[in-house]
Image: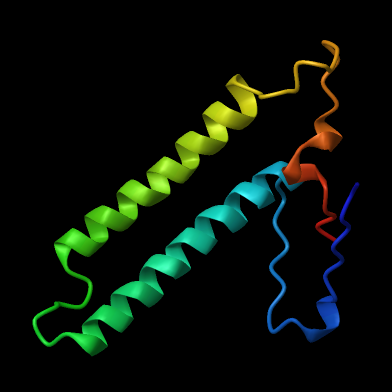
Length: 105
C-alpha cells in the first residue's frame, strides 16, 4: 500500500527551491521538524517557568545533539544499514520504504 501525499503549493507562504535531491530534501525536512519541535518546547518552558533561561547553553547544546543524531540516523539507517523482511529476496526495492511512499511535489 502506497500513500501519496501531494503538496498544494498555492497555499504555501514561501516556496524555497533548492538544487538538491529529493532524498536530501527529506533529510532537511526531518532536521527542520526536530529543530522546530525543540524551539517550541524551549519557548513554552520559558513562558511556563520563571527560572528557565531562553536559549541557554544547555538548550543550544541539546538541540545540536538532537540534530546531529538525526543526521547520523539518516546516514546509517538509510545508507549503510537497511532492514528488510526475511521473506524478501536480495533485491531491495527502495520504493517499499517510508521515505519513498509519498511524493514531495
